[in-house]
Image (cartoon, rainbow, N blue to C red; front, side):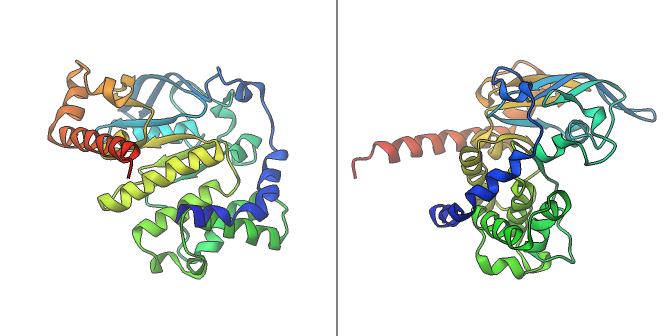
Length: 300
């Protein structure tokens, strides 16, 4: 499916590249040693409720960085702060070197064109077809012709592995996995450098979730993306995350690879990764690694 989907985009490659030509280029984004995202001493309060007390982390270009933790630890809140939908009570967040507080007034800032967001459960417009949903960012933020928009939308739909005839369907006519792929197509339709995923595999069965993870890996490689993913899916963390930040007690309890975090002495991290569900995910990841090695060394 992957090769069939990807081969259809060649005719629109010049159009896709043109989407970046009008974007603001900043030296901090081109320097591979400079983090794409910097979160420094962020505190978040809603009335008397404290979500974050002191959160700091950095996300580097080209990695799949996951934000994990228990329910209510502020994972999605932090993501919304990073993209400028919520203003933290204290601290600073820089996205491509720009303070996120400069982004919260609306979506007119050039930085908004440099990232795409896939919200929880897809957040598709129920009265729009799949193609119309995917086209929304292009219609709102570009002056491309209807024909070019149609071609780009078709390319992105193919890129996420959906059949051409799905373009005319409405969200309620799609399976859960297809809706997530449609939402992903919309998130990448502007050819972003940075992709945010909020609980992308929540509610999907394990096979569909694994297929979605494989798709994210393929798109990261194909498009040169940096991916920031909020998730509680331990299987997904083992499969695709380069680094993971674990939130808890209002702060970052640890940052590292899954292997490093699974050996942490912190009681919250240890319970999260070494509890029954965590051990099962770790064992499955080990089996997957052995199967992959066997398939690549088998002379047959």
